[in-house]
Image 1 (tube, rainbow, N blue to C red):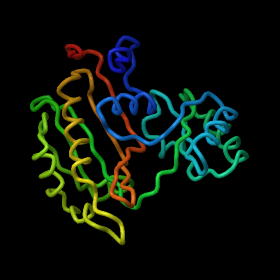
Image 2: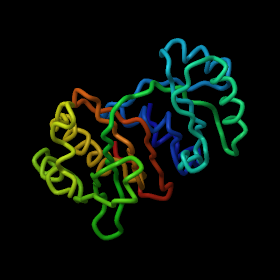
Image 3: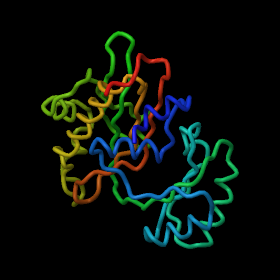
Length: 229
């Protein structure tokens, strides 16, 4: 499925989170296990399939900053909690459905994204993620495409580079896997002219150093010159 071409034809300005993750997953970017469901009862079944605890989110094309909108419910452990939160989330304006997601454990959070500069074209961003992205503002940028060597240098260029090392009994970040994510984002920027912005935040670092994207945004500019094959 060509998520971007289909979205452009439909006149969308962004992919919803589920669509964005499926698109990124096609480029080898690891994402959390999740299911898209229309209502609370289906959410209960999905939670049983995924295993408790779970995260429940409202999702939709125009729900781009879900935390600020109260569109995320964390660490749900029972059917009652899911039904209650599902009713609340489905009442949020522009909600198209619910995402039931595994709870991913990890104290460290990273961010990787793409911006399309009028002068330099697609530029890849990497830095400290989660709630600290805007607060600490520790990120570096490179013009796409990105080589593996450049991706590895980007990791060393953030001020908080030590976060990638072994941390409180946890393994160091899998830098090769992280480099693949950074390179893939650059590939998307070069291949899809209609992709205006990508924001993968946070990328959770598990205790064993492996990585998983638990939220993602892909915005689209319908008037670009086209989608390259």
